Amino acid sequence: MKIIGVYGFKKSGKTTVVTSIINALVKEGYSVSSAKSIHIDSFSIETEGTDTFKHHASGAERVGLVYPKGKAILYYDLKTEDFLNNFESDYLILEGFREYNCPKILCARDEADILKDLREEVFCISGLISNKIQNYNGIPVIDHKQIDKIIEIIEKL
Image (cartoon, rainbow, N blue to C red; front, top):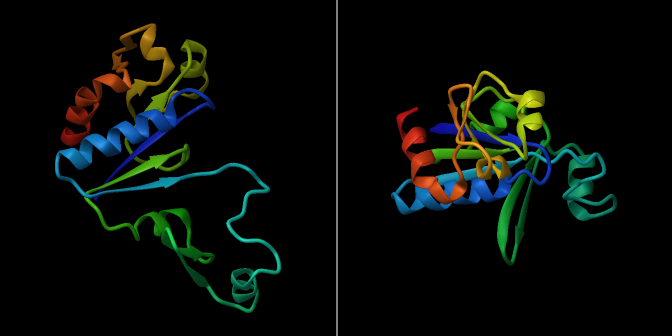
């Protein structure tokens, strides 16, 4: 499984780039999974007092949820890397996960964003800045509308 990260600041185009990559890879016949990192301290998929909350509070390391539109497993005992390795697909596309070590696309609004958050794992820059520049210090800047160029790079990684 190849893991590709897409990270950047709020409103820089991350989700648009992620969904474009997923869509293009699926059209190429690959199996694709995704994971989103949420950095809101108050966010929780469960609420105190619910049955799933009680299951975990009683000692369950994992709690499964089955609901009309999907299924989920809540892991409480895994490190992020171990959790991500549970996905079984050709590609796992990450949104966020700034600190996770994998090839990455930086989504930026402007050059200031790039200066603040460019990491050595970045093989491509995208997002709103792609309307302004096409290259940044040798790193290609590619608009999500040219997703075939991003996919071509990803397939060679």
